Amino acid sequence: MDPRNHAKPALRQRLTAPDDGAPRCSPQPTPARPPPVLCLGMARTGTASLAEALRILGVGRVHHGLEIYQKEFNYQWRIINRAADATFPVLPTYTGKPFTREQWDEVFGDYDAVTDVASFYAMSLIHAYPDARVILVERDIERWHESISQVMKAWEDPWQRRMVRLLGPIAGSDTGKASLKFLMGWTGSKRAEDMRKNARAAYIRHYRDVRAAVPPAQLLNFQFSDGWEPLCKFLGKDVPDVPFPHVNDAAAYAEFLQTTKIDFLKRLVANLSPLVLLLTFLRFVSQGAAWGISKCIGYLVHLVAPERKR
Figure 1 (cartoon, rainbow, N blue to C red):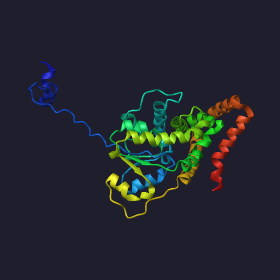
Figure 2: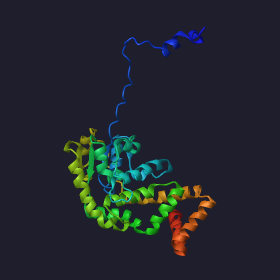
Figure 3: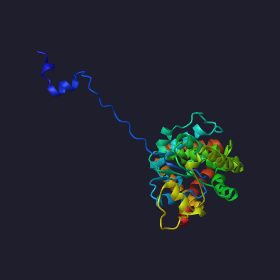
Figure 4: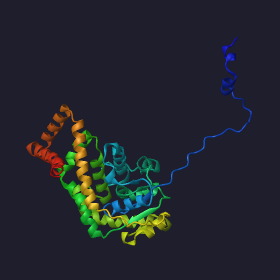
């Protein structure tokens, strides 16, 4: 006797379901998550204040670059780094393949609003999320340039760039590499030394392009002096009975730098084996001998010195 005939009837029915013409249930597509609110006012235009305001309004998770320095967020910086290659033709690593919504969702898919770092990728995000609401905060260009120059000037030191390139992989950090790429890409600079010079033109171009690309019904041109009302109306939120928040972008960035330096150093020490230390030392010697070594030591001292002063 064929042993298959002894199979349990229920199992046999599942294995040999008759073609009775009965309708079959097809898997239901998962509802698409609403796109995040795109806060595309440039970095250093009050992005930390806007992020705090959105949290007060109950928007949910708000993405800001100052809050993703920890090791567990490095996967985001790797994607942000790849996005730079896909977005900015001036970069030698440019691929010419625009980032898709699915790719951006790897970073922003779990967030309800994005700001700060996202502003450098404004046009890519607008194309990826064409149904998103956009909030645009514009600051006086000269005051903005003075503020953003604090960020860009540090990258003009070739040894800082070399340190990031050599030590970043050892520390398991892509933050510096990605940041330099999108700063150069957004300003259209082939050299880091040109970023401050090109920043004003990039700023003007940024706001012009965003306003031209976003339908008026999806765009809020917002000034902090306007208070809660226009922001709440745009987002469909009740006006809260608290003052509009004010976070000092420069002070927040200075604190971010100090925190990331200490975090970077801890990760570097944790990952640094004697062999890697020797190879790194020899590489520095080959690229600058004693002067390079002194710069290396100076950079490491700079990482920890501010902490000792606290």
